[in-house]
Length: 297
Image 1 (tube, helix red, strand yellow):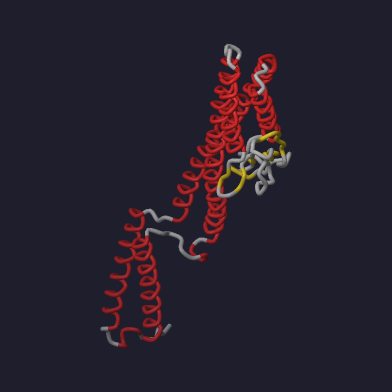
Image 2 (cartoon, helix red, strand yellow):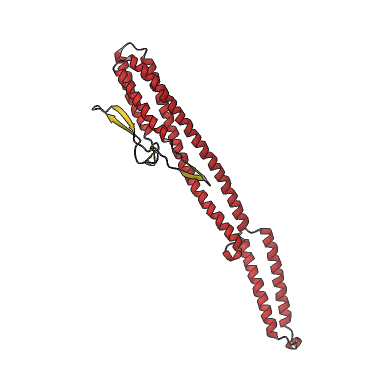
């Protein structure tokens, strides 16, 4: 059978082009460190990479939620601890007032109570980025509303926030609220109103009323301590979720790298093989093209 020179030439060109293409592709992978850059490179691997990248985007949002959650819980805890310290001082005043003999001294303590009331109100209406943290899911509304007399002194307080809380995801399948439960928020009002009663009793030099109010205030102190404990539990849940997310994020990055990144050692071996094959093909082609056409008849 006759084999034409054209047939050998075409075969040689196709072989050289194929090997050259493989060489370029391997050099690109070695340069970029990526085994998969286009869907056609490995469709199954690309599908897995895309799913894992989607999971990573979710985790990035979880991380944003962690930052916001940590800020809210830290501010909340600080406000609650401030209320606890203020309540401690209020109870100290109520205790010392029972030992006073001058009405004027009791009235002075009453003046200090006015200042403490304002500080409790400020702590209860704490905000984060302009939103009230103790208002449940109605963060645009200050939760503690007060009535004042003509002298600007607080005479009563009420809770006007929401009785429900917002929640957001902090991990896959884990959704929590980083805000204090509204049942605690409403008890800030009890603290304010009991403190108003103490203030009035001091200014009236009514030791019996002072003693009664002091007893009532002890339960408010317990309420604040319970709120601090609950907020601490929320912070712990947030920290655990954050740690789990960080581990999952790191694992996903490792898995994506395993799918997309090239094995440098393996790629270098393959490149060397292709280059040897290309060199051999070129040498064979050179020898064949140098022979007479009669050799192929």
